[in-house]
Image (cartoon, rainbow, N blue to C red):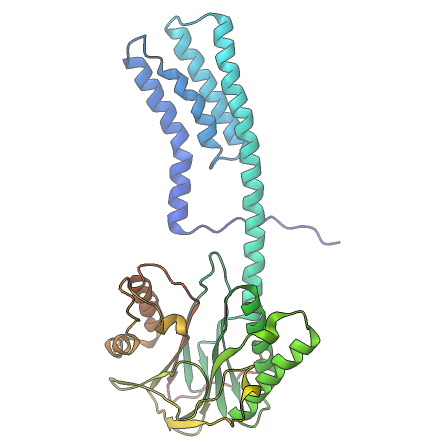
Length: 378
């Protein structure tokens, strides 16, 4: 039997940490203000009654012991203030102290429930982090002659994983990259994305070309649907863009299955890489007879290719105008490649007024011209 380790504590964003700090200071501040105000006001104005709120305020951020301690301090302060003014009888004092004691007990229970839920949330968050590292791990910063720079934001509140997915692998003689978007949101979209990621990782190394790789991704979805008929993976489709970057040349090959066209940057020029006859999205191939068409285009050292999902291109401002991605990409043409994802993230958040309604994934692929040691399957 393995010994249980310490429970993970919730990781707080800077804004949340500030709120917690202020919350912890609030009971102390209230006690200080009540004492000062009670001492300088006439006897008719008994502000010491406000001390009853102190343990309730402490329950929001303090531990159980801290909440009890704050409540006892509030009781002592009120007793001192009342006795110092020659206040009510001993029976009335005990009654008022009993009220604070009861509020303190209730507040301690609330603090215990809150602390337990925070621990549960920390454990769930830790599990989600592990799942993300396994299912949707960040790509390596470099594969062969290619650099990879990622932006990934899940739209669901508190989510680590969404319906957008990506992967990159180095095979003998080339680097293969996939970026896609599953129809819909929620756990069903995550399930479909994980199936496609697994299919890509298991077949990208031995598929002879991109059309064969796309067919195997489709087959992976079909096999999964047959294995688990109750899953809604069979009902969802996914748009995908596949890219192959040969080591020995200055070209790139692209196969687009209903996905937004990538942006190609050569110098300061930015253009979309349109495919004359794009393939249908995955899981829809059976609806029509079509063959995958691969687009080959120049892609030399220093060139950049931005793959993205519609969470980027379909972000709207308050007037309903779509995000001008091509225009922004031209503005960032001279920026270091590793800064582009953060520039895009900040600009999207500002353009959408801080509200991103869809998952956002963008992968900037840069050909450096220099080779790196090949990596095995990840």
